[in-house]
Length: 435
Image 1: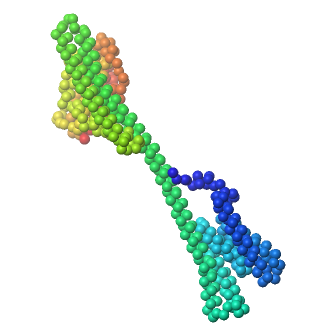
Image 2: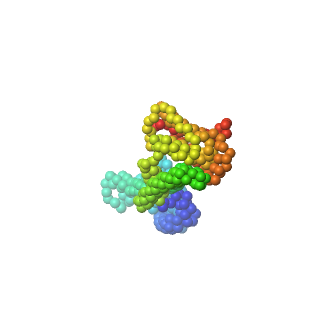
Image 3: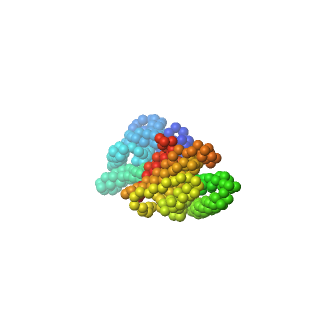
């Protein structure tokens, strides 16, 4: 985990302007060393200037102690070092001050100006000093040595700390930039992880809804017909044994069909669970829900499902249960994508199931229209007889049939409309794009 800028500011534990106690101890040590140096050099300055030695020592100690504020005011430290350069003191303060100035965040023109002033001041002072020493006869060298010594000393006292400070400052800014980028990347990764978790939860909810819809379509219609046939079987068992046997056979056939479809659905769920377990071992937790949903959806789409060719059989089953159903097909019959045919079949199936539940005995019209770029279907029933409607109240309803039909149709870009008719019946209409 990286440390953000706010956390670094909160972690400052040093006194005053120092970020750490270690930095404060270092600056205090440098200030003491600079004060001692300037105090010793102040003795010579006092003798040359004709002032008391104690005054020179105090002046040197005070000037050298300015190094204590080098981090807070580097410009002031450099200016003090330039000011005491003619007194031939403050060499340590000049070196450390230039380094601190170059490593700071100040504009380059200010750094260049102060470095140039320090170089020129050192050059003049060294030129005068070397010339004085040669005039005293301390050195017996040619005239070329004076400018050579002055230039070499001035560059040697100015260039190395300046270049080192520029390098350290650039490296420090680079590290700060890298920290900020790392913080930004960490925040983006955290945001992506949260979004991935949200998408995974959404995918899990969608898959639960899809499974519930499939189970409802598989079970509700078959069981509703079985209940209707069972009621008819109970009514005619003693009066018409042959019809009772026929109704019992129909109940058995529908029960076997329901079990077959349930086995197919459970097989899809098992394969989806296996894929989810494999995905859980191979990918992070936030992707398991998406992987499981995709695997289950792919398995359902590739599995064998109902198609429009089975629509007549579906209507025949409702007719065998005592419903008067009128099926009409318009347009040129053709095949569609598997998901389009399954959706159209499920809409008709669920609409017929609702008629069995809520309008038993009502005459029902099923219309299917093959158009150029779409397929339309409509299931409309007349008002149910009073006796039949009373008996149909025994069939429970979860209230999810119309919701499931609308979800299926709108998922394919279609339009779904349902509601009561003026005559007292109920109408379900859907239009699904062919592509």
